[in-house]
Length: 282
Image (cartoon, rainbow, N blue to C red):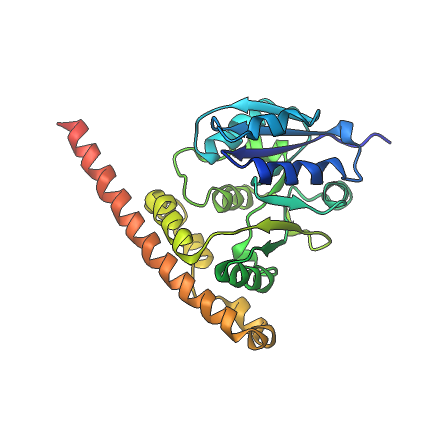
């Protein structure tokens, strides 16, 4: 029986080494490679990323200097498949990831699936994030679907291009509100090769949170659940946390710092946008 086609959408800029690792993990999938297309939306990389992508025949390369939520929409627009997988350039799939996700969707009729992540890296923050990813595996409020049907994607209008903040939670929340069926695909996982420090994570949070106030306006109840720092999932994994007290302390410290910088970024974005609005209305 023919397998349904799958498109993997990857926004990228200057990640040649990471893209090679990701594309190699696609090449060894046990799913028919002729039924997989990888749409790489490149924001004009200058480090050889495009040359790496062109070395893999299943890659469609699109040049577009845009933020990742816009890039994901453009990548989907040039694909024509039943299923979509949204990945980041610093991720790596297990060999049976695609076949497992398709099997769950086909047999159990789920419209969107979250994929557990396993973080890697050498920094203290990377190790702390690795602990967090394990702890929140079964926390449904911290899920962002990376696998979905094209029908579901189109039904909600794809990614919200007005809000850069948490684009994965944004589309996930709208898909649930539209009545599409979701579960966590615990049968597989993907590696997330995060290598940033706590300070680098804090700087990123300031940038991406500049549209967070728009997210709050749209999803007030969901926002409280998704970004509540007191995670119920922590209580479920006290034994694991007790084995790694240093990492959990680093996680709490890092989370506190990113919440502060994220809130600062949100305030900055709100004040900036209000100033520009008043300026345009004069």
